[in-house]
Length: 223
Image (cartoon, rainbow, N blue to C red; front, side):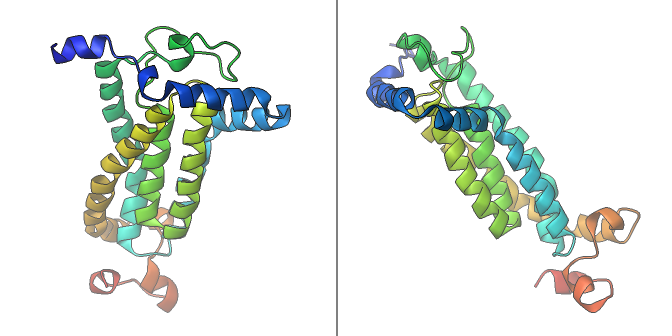
């Protein structure tokens, strides 16, 4: 069987459809308030990562230029991860579990035909953002990591993804984000120069300047 034909008949329910059904059953039996909290989080929670990126930028104004470079690159990291994942989705074309298994009454309305399931976009975005933040600011990265796990779990709870959609989505997000976040640190000299110009009010003075009241040297910032 050719790869294209194999993907055309791909049925994700054979991997963990039973676990998906069990989780959806838990959601059906859970208190209404809990379901509503998870539903809102699943739909709007990605906004938290944008807020964390803004907070990381604010904190990086008093940090070294490498940290600032990685903070500024974090939205681009997320965009690239999303683009890579969209390519996977268009190749695999996995039908949503709620449609494949005929599950009705899921917390989130089952997406229509052509809105593929594998991997989970929400999870990819969340884990890419968390990874990018981790390399820029450990504390905010840790918060984002917990939020990413909760986001991935919520996508199964609301009934629109198999567990393997989420697990692979997390892997895609991390694998795309790690090299990009590391590479972004090489733009530190550009941040140094920008901090000497009109963008200084936005980029801050840097770690050494904040402590000593002067402009940080390139050598000091790289320590």
